[in-house]
Image 1 (cartoon, rainbow, N blue to C red):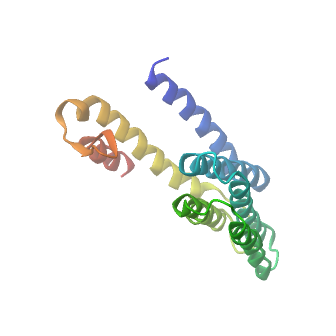
Image 2 (cartoon, rainbow, N blue to C red):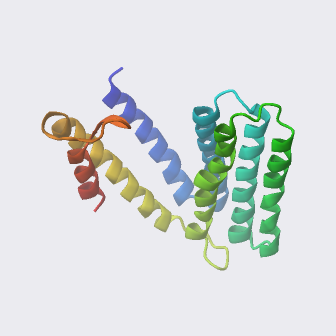
Length: 193
């Protein structure tokens, strides 16, 4: 199947799920976002750690899911704010677990367990404050607008990059991503604006 068709089908499916999450109610939002967080953290940890530290990877994902869930309950259901500190319990368990790992030679891989929490879970958990007001009422329109800007940038970069960037543009960072071009970058910026 053509790469463009695959991207289009997966993009439409993803957009439909996210639209449902942003426009229905806070329960659908919470479930979709928690599921998305777990998938993102799993993918990141597979890319960075591979098959190493499996138990620690599960603990890292659990710590991220706990942080998201507690901030979700705080923002949407007004649980006491001091309970959000319980999100540190799985992080401490992960730290204790690191003391008992037999192979301590790959600290770079082990550091990715914490990077997943900081890089994915913390920003994803902060999205709760974009959809809930101080009274805990849900409104996903602001977050939907934010995602539309991101989607516009991604689609614009892809279309400009494929049509013009591959033929006429210079490469953006060929050592990191050989197909990215400056024309794609500017096309994404233009589309998002």
